Length: 245
Ligand SMILES: [Zn+2]
Image (cartoon, rainbow, N blue to C red):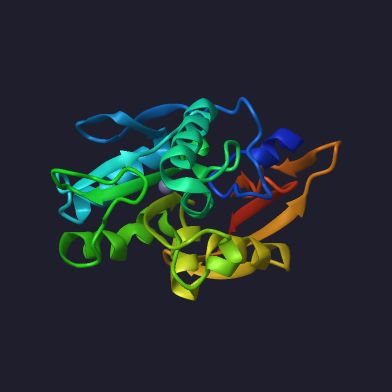
């Protein structure tokens, strides 16, 4: 039987990795990048996340009206933003709205700040409305694997103030499940750690669960159809399509 071996490094990559103050990103992990949206060459995202973002913005009718403000940042750039914000806006503001270098989702290439097109766009707190084409984007984003990452009401779980402009790619079907159940990423990962779940999806069903990955790694048979993402917490998250009876 063909097999695939997953190592500890694999727990640190993939669309479901948790990156926050207590889960820093491993140094030196640079994603393969491309422009976040057509015509916005200066803002980059991991390639698959970019493709799905562009498809979502296009489907919402938002091309040219929804602007990519900040996507992938190197650790050096995140440090610069942290230092600039400390100097210009003080410590309380910076701790609320800027992640420490190494602890920012922007370093994964899976996160983006979006704004309505306007003559002036606030770089740290851009404005993305909830109505019109922006509301439509928000409504369909989970179908394209994107979630609003720091919603109001989840501050005590995420440790981050509400950021209605910051979106995170987690992929399918995870974004849809999180949206349907009102879960932020921390809560979703806790659910998977607690035994996983089953989800009716595209005419079938998937099972999603976590397995721990020790120093020896994990060997999985390729006979089963599954996708894998690390959780950046020593585990692998498996999404397995159930065979119909
Ligand atoms: Zn952001």
